[in-house]
Amino acid sequence: MKISNKTPRAHASAAFFSLLLCCATAAAQQPADKTSDKPAQPQQTASAAPGGGAATAGKPAALAPSATVAELARAAYQSLGGDRFRDLRNMVLTGSLDLYSPVSTQAISGRFGVITAGEKIRQEMQSPFFSASLIYDGVQSYSSVRGFELPNPSKFGLPVLVKHAQPGFTVSALPEKDGKKVRAFRVTDPEGNATDFRVEAATGRLVGYEIPFGGVTFVVEIKNTKEIDGVTVPTNFVQRLATPQGTFIAEFKVKEAKLNQELPADAFAIPAK
Image 1 (cartoon, helix red, strand yellow):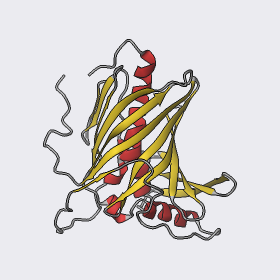
Image 2 (cartoon, one colour):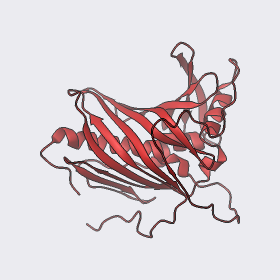
Image 3 (cartoon, helix red, strand yellow):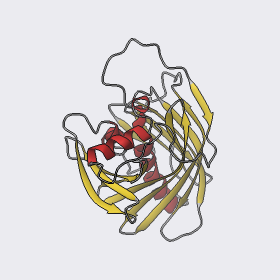
Image 4 (cartoon, one colour):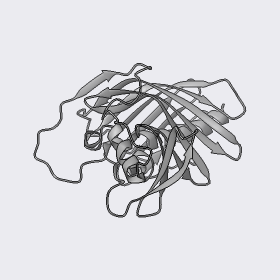
């Protein structure tokens, strides 16, 4: 697929926010570090209408003002569903999106779909102005967007939080934000890739994160979520890309979320050149 040459701005926005969405959702599907003989989890499907409320999976408990940065990271992980989140076999999200460029208040509307399983991901975006396909099959990547390559999605965003307590990962404190209502911490992987997480100070509930990458900053704000089988699934989230040309904004609204599906064998197949 190719993005229409009629709208260069839509081209840039599509490439851009495809990366953001990959970072935002790839995570939860990190496989467990241990081998298990337990039966496969049953399929779960739920409608994800906006207004699902705060992250209820994991039932964030009150945190003391003196909570350590390690306790903050653990609380943020638990607010996503903890080990249930980590052990998901896959997640499928579909819904609508609105893209805004720095020079326009009028949105480019479209639809999106994303499938993630472990470190594999397939992202599709469509609107009257563009279509785009991004795939990472666990080894190599494919992009229908000229000049855009999908990085390994396991190195940024939520996958880093999932692995924050593993050897080689470091957690460090960041300055408080928003009048002490929000606390922040950074998780850095063994290769030096870093993601900054923001949590609700009173509970440790994850409310967003930032990724410095390639001279720009990706910002994800989690607005609403829904619990499915003990796992927190985003139903409404906003992503921003701060660049020298201005800030691009995208709002995603998940209409349907499915967990632990039987995926087709070619779900992550890269098209032949």
